[in-house]
Length: 139
Image (tube, rainbow, N blue to C red; front, side, top):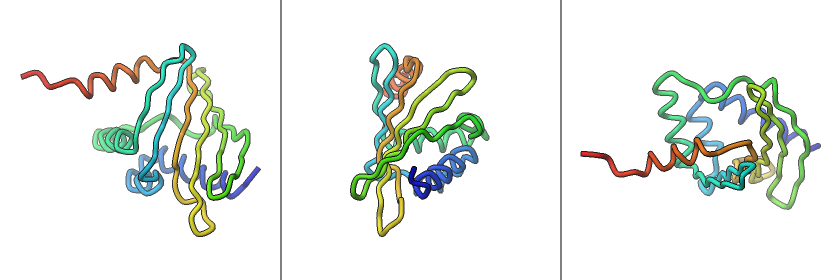
């Protein structure tokens, strides 16, 4: 297990739990992409712009994403050149999810999250949110 990668992951998770929007903006690579896949095979693709818009809206409302980080387990890390992957398991409110975070290494340091693959039970809610966000405004 690459402890430097796990430590950087903990920094990322702490920024998310604290809704530190500026830290999150710096942690997400400009090329960041999140693919969310569910048990039915539905797939949602999110970009850094999607994530940051959601975080900023929640922060402006005084809300946060998810809960604490006590339920997170780091299962494995791998390294391939200037990229490293952390495999994470989390069970929020009894619902398990699995993640693979791909980090970019710059100047000997894990710099930014390049990609996140999320495997969860159902992404229908997210598909509905994305459809509502892209629908033309009535008026």
